[in-house]
Length: 101
Image (cartoon, rainbow, N blue to C red):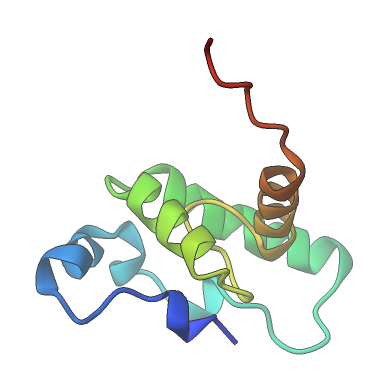
């Protein structure tokens, strides 16, 4: 389940970008795997979902929102569940640049 405490309040300006999403015209089942889906079937479904994302004018907003709330399921902003986990893991282990003297 997404970490709801990380979601911003219900301010329309923060979420209006979702109305422009290419996924609004697609079958939602394309973006979320059924229970037990694995292997080539899952890779093909993810690839088809990512193809929709690749045409999306708000892919960056979607990607950043999914990472901010740690969305655990589906393809968001062109990233699968595993890819989002990898991005978040890299962020948590990144060494910050030292402050300029």
